[in-house]
Structures are given as structure tokens and as C-alpha cells.
Length: 394
Ligand code: SF4
Ligand code: SF4
Image (cartoon, rainbow, N blue to C red; front, side, top):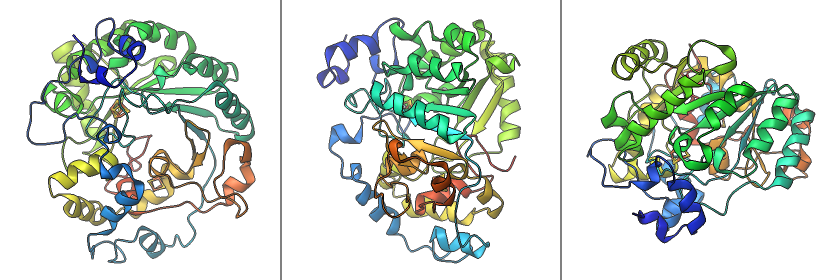
């Protein structure tokens, strides 16, 4: 049986996504909870006003914020209050590539607005080659692959192999369910042979919270995928086969304490399903894209922003990911982070290049450039801090 997605996805893509044991795209039944975000369709498919970054900025700027270090709700002013008049990078360590917006899922909190309908935005081979050249010039030790579901890009395995050959550490940001789809079932062993670190999103170790956010049936598929990774040697303490899980709150609150959650998660998943993993990252939801849309529906935008600003932690500033990461979009443009990328906030380059591309990349210019910020940045500095590497203050 075809789901709603088949009305707007090319048939070959539907066949790929829905084959084998099934991905979340096979089941878009109404979600089970009224609280917390729920799986949805992409905003672009619905032609939702928030598809426009300009509209997202308007919504973020609307609330009058009088809390935080400067009492203005202005992120740059709050940085300045703590001595960061200039907000520039440290060392470039991570080259993060967003391979595209195509995904077999449509999670409610998705900051990329990914989904099965996003078939247009996928990195081509020429841009992959430009990435490989820029990686050489960057000196980064890690290549971090994200999406969408990066595994759905036809150049994914070529790119991983090229990076492994260069001796780089490769991270795959995986939604788990994609590993059960027909063309991707071999990936656990394939990753293991190459020492790829697999970082997988799972909102909660309980079924209800996970299915509410990511779609009915996601939890069972996720557990099955973790089991497949365990069988391939992942999640058992081998640094060459590292399995990391990522949790984010199912609701309008901040991420919990990462260290204490990790043990709770390990115990629960082992006890309930006999599966194991190596580390847990606890991330805040970013007030943007589909999560912002959900906050608006619930009348929670102001409250959530205030919560983030109130929890502003100056100890996290030095460690925010834009200071050690270069973010590249599917079409080869450069950004300070994947969040800025989705908000179309291009990197501020040397004044001559308005919209820097991989072809313009040069390490010295990157080191001097000013990082661009807006109110969504409070998601990175709230509480223990939050980024692709998890909590900033461990
Ligand atoms: S959050 Fe991840 S898995 Fe969910 S729709 Fe977005 S890219 Fe896909
Ligand atoms: S949202 Fe991006 S630019 Fe803003 S603080 Fe976080 S990582 Fe840096």
C-alpha cells in the first residue's frame, strides 16, 4: 500500500524508500500524542509560510525579550556582555557536508524541512569532487555527513570511500530507519569495514515519545536498526565501530543532563531490547523550521525563546560548533553551521564574495571571518550548550 508520499515522489524514489522491511515513509498514520511535536509533511510540500527564512526571522524577532545578560534578546549583545565583541572561529576541525534534503522520514522537529518530497536538493558528483578538494585545503580531521538522510544520496558511498582513503574520520548522521530500506541494508557491515562512526537520532528510549515526534512505527524500526548495527560490531566499545545516539526533547523544554541520561538510556535499551550503544548526545531543539512551526501552533514561541535566553551559559560560547566546523550545502555553498544553512544565512566572507562557495574556500579567510548569528543561536548556548557534538559543557 502506498502512503501519501507516493502522490508527490517519483515512483522509483518511493520504491527505494519503501522497500525491504519498510521505512517510516511506509506508515504515516496519525500520531499518537497531543503533547510534543508530531511527525508531519515537509513545509515546502504544504507551501507553509515558514518555508521562507525571512518569515522565520520575523517570528523569532517578534517577542520582546528582556531576560539574559543584556536584557535584549540580541545574541551578539549577549556575547559582547561576556567579552566576545568579535565572534570568530578557532581551529577548523570538522568539515560538515549536507548531502541534501531528501529523507525517508518527516520528523516534526526537523530543522532541515526534509522529507521524501525533497528530491531536487541532492549533491551531485561535481560538487562532491569540489568538497574533496576543499577538505584537503581545510586541514579538517573529520568529515561529518548529514542531510536529509545522507545515505540516500547516490554519491554517498563514493564520498565516504574517498574520505576514508585520505585517512579522515568519517561520521554518518543516520536516522536509523534508512538502514532497513532495501538499497541500504548492507550499510552496517559496510560502515564497520571502513571505521565510520554512526551517529543516530532517537528522540527517546521509550516508544511513545519517539513515535510521536518521528512517526508511528519509527521506534520499532529504530531498535531493529540498532540491533543490526550491534551485529556488525557497533556499540560495544570498539573505537573503530562507534555508535552514538542523539536525543532531543519531545516538547518545548531544554535537553536534560547528558551524562546522567546516558546511563539511564544504556540501562533501558539493554534491559528492554538487549541492544547497546557507546555514547549519548543530548541536543536542544532549535527554534526554527518545523519545530518553530510547532511552537507557533502551540503558542509557545515566546516562552521557548525566553527559556533559551534565560538559560544562556557563557561557558559554552567558546565551544559552539560554528567555531570549529565548516558547513557545506548540497549545492556547494559555505555556512557557519547547518542551522544557518537552512536559514540561508551565507557565511560572511572577505567582502568581495557575497555568497562564498567551495571554490572560494581558503583557510586563512575562514579563520578571520565573523560568524553570523541570530536568535536561533540561543539554542546552542542554553544550559550545558548544544551542537553536533552534543552538550558543550560536559
Ligand atoms: S530530523 Fe532527520 S530523519 Fe527526521 S526528517 Fe529531518 S533529516 Fe529526516
Ligand atoms: S546556530 Fe550556528 S552560528 Fe549560531 S551559535 Fe549555533 S553553531 Fe554558531
